[in-house]
Image (tube, rainbow, N blue to C red):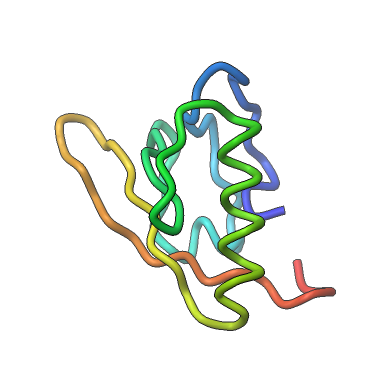
Length: 88
């Protein structure tokens, strides 16, 4: 999983924590970030967000894909590089 240590609020896309060394941490995601968009797809709930991450990772292959988060009063665009199959 990209967010191995996250304990989600399933009605939200806010991250409770980000596991050290995960693709999420390497991309710069932080606990408290609320994901707004994954690979150009708007997300507002946990399950659709996870699907968007999986779909974007498959489409991107080894390339990073954009993730837009709300961090405090800011919108931040990060680049998330998925694990290859069998990694982390």
